[in-house]
Image (cartoon, rainbow, N blue to C red):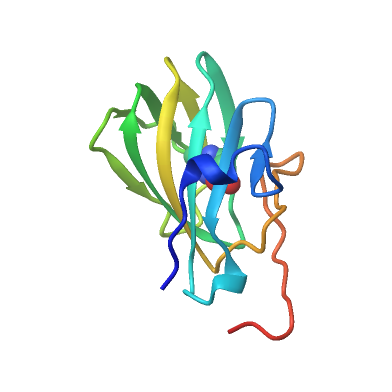
Length: 131
Ligand code: 9YT
């Protein structure tokens, strides 16, 4: 069994910071669960273009207010209790109107240090000896 707290991971190499968000990675590929599990804080009044072409992501908003815009320009409000799942590797734009706290699940799992490239993409990192 794995027991971890987000507080114990802050400030370590499990907390990845970018301009618009920071992501604390509670479960990674090396944990052998088949997915990774993150708490993401999205900074207020930010807009981030994202395209996880190598991963599926589900995101559950637990605090804050924002919106997600699909490539076809359709916008969906994000408030606590809203989930979005990028089941088609959907390109999207994420806007935070206040600080947002999100729970994010990635399949395949992230390895650890991934951060967005200039297109909002994470690379697919393969490691040997995955459980
Ligand atoms: C909501 C979102 O995708 N934010 C970017 C960070 C990502 N969720 C991560 O790496 O945890």
